[in-house]
Amino acid sequence: MEILVWAAHVLLAVVLIVLVLLQHGKGADMGAAFGSGSAGSLFGASGSANFLSRATSITAAMFFATSMGLTYLSANQTKDVSVMSIMDQIEETEKVSTDLKKKPTTQEDADSPEIQGNSKAGQIPE
Image (tube, rainbow, N blue to C red; front, side, top):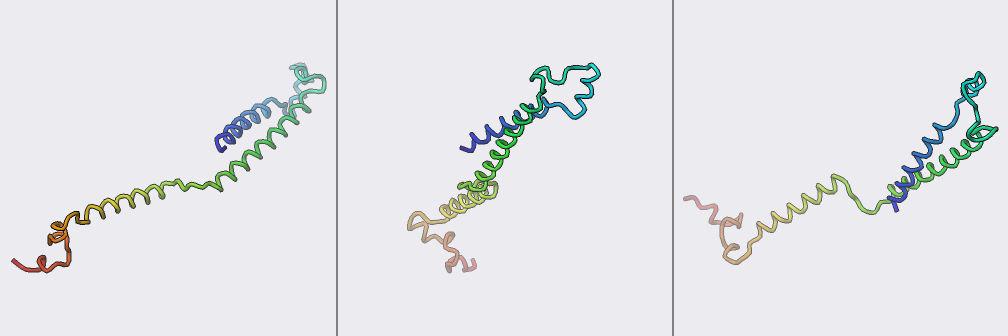
C-alpha cells in the first residue's frame, strides 16, 4: 500500500512541476504584445490560464492528499526497524550464544573447577 502511495506521490510531483513550468508568468503577456509570440495560440483565444490553473490546483490538492497519506502510513508503522533495534537484537543474540557456551553440557564438565567460579579447589594455593 505504501509503495503505491509513494509512486503516486512522485508522479504527482513531476506533473505538478511540469504544469507550473508550462504556465505563463505575469510579464509574459507584455512580451507577446510587442510581437515576440502569441499568448494563447496553443490553448485557444483565452489562453492557458483557465485550463492550466485548474489542472495545477487539482494536482496540488492530490499531492497534498498523498503527502498526508504518507505521513499517516509512516506514523502507524507496526514493525520497528531502526539501527538501534537491530543492534539490540545482535547484542541479545551474542548474549544468548555466550550463555550457551558457559553452560556445562555433561556432568563431568559441571564438576570441573574451571566452570564453577566459587569452588574451593580454585582457592587452594599450590
